[in-house]
Image (cartoon, rainbow, N blue to C red):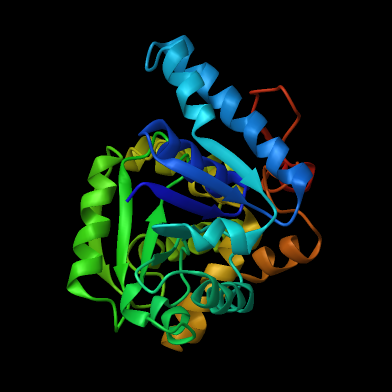
Length: 296
């Protein structure tokens, strides 16, 4: 595999494009917005600068990485020449199904179609394509260039050969792949999201405040980031979407999203990306300040 197409230029999409390009792959990054693509390139450049500053890569490696990335709003042309397509669009089932239907028309029959979905069924996605055996989950962690894990999710029809290719490819990227089967939330989010949801319930029921809950988990459980701060970092809308998938998929009330989370998303308080969640965020500031609504 040499030619990689990444669909989506948001946090995950640009991180995936950055990682493939840094390891010498030719990457086409696709989005519906030219402005979003240009912003993503700027983000990749800034992240590469940080790697240079830390001595992780050289200036020549930075230049080579950027030279390996092209941006385009033309999905058909980008997908038609790809050996692998990695979809990193928004976590919405209908959007993903429509994309994979298109990809099935545009791509060669041997092209591997991967989704970076954090919870949506790979089996359902594969079912709308002409070659479901070539469809697989490739769930990277954020920030992609730094995090070692790739959850490799086998759909019901995914072939052994495709699974092995993606496991090997992940290792080529310096990652540690873990093969899992296709059930709601896979492994990472099936375990993580109920913990985050329970932390939100603890706040909702006034067991403790935002900082107190996060401090207990950081100091008591050695988590690098508390669950409420992590929820802000992931995006509260994403957390809500994943919990809905878990609740629908298992039919178990233990996965029902906390009403506080539902209300926050409805109000547009989505965490770091909107500037306000459990904490409030100011551009350029590293100080962590509890949002006014939750100050005790």
